[in-house]
Image (cartoon, rainbow, N blue to C red; front, side, top):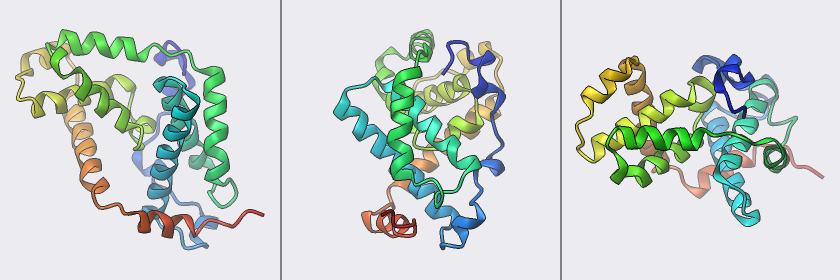
Length: 206
């Protein structure tokens, strides 16, 4: 990802949620539903994270790889572009191209909000957002603020005045926060059996 988000191609290609939640016809013909589609992307996100740990790359490389992978399936079907091949390819490309400074900026925000004691919680929330399509729909700073908002609620930290000083649309921040919390609720119900059933709908590569 580019150092300056506002001049990056990622900013220019932010999408509406309706554009992200599209299952291609060739995938539908194989019985892949929208739930399957989301489940496979989540499974491959976790796979990228595990693979990255094995080769000891930084978290921001993982974030970039996941963004690449999720962007592929905006335009291409899983039947044509096997996620099991796309995922490691995206990690390789990300390791070659990543030069983002987003992490340092978020740390400044966390400290400015008086949330230093919740830094680990906030980082955990940020990392988990890459298991969703939020990264394709919202700018990183709004996702970061939503994570701080969730952390402040969980830690019972009053930050209303701080958020007001930022002059951001709190309705958007709160909506993103709700999507993050919904992800955790949904994630609890995901079993290995559901993942296996979804993956079995992909073509067998020989």
